[in-house]
Length: 139
Image 1 (cartoon, helix red, strand yellow):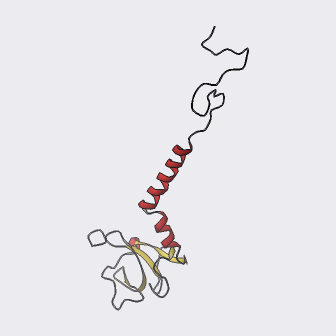
Image 2 (cartoon, helix red, strand yellow; image 1 turned 90 degrees about the vertical axis):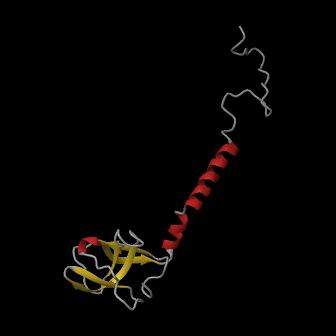
Image 3 (cartoon, helix red, strand yellow; image 1 turned 180 degrees about the vertical axis):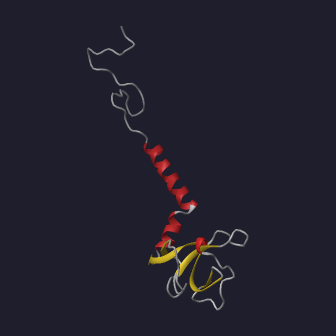
């Protein structure tokens, strides 16, 4: 949708009962087509037999799909430039997996630390008890 929206922009859409000619709307590629489910953002350029005729601002031809009102996700209401690219990166499986591994490694590497009431030295050997205190095993 250049020049209005750039690749990587986050565009917020709002569902409406009607969409006027000139509105920028989002719809999904129909299930039986290549790219099924992909969200498309194009401008309404007309209506015919209850279907919308859509076209991207930089496209010379109309879209081959002509969705009905119920098939449109919503109309663009505002956008945040470039934040969509950031969100896509943050949600990537590689980044999420690396982050999870890093957190798990840090927890294991640092360990829980000394426990309250622990009577062992740094090497794990028992510490001598102060005089007059007996261990639980002694009578």
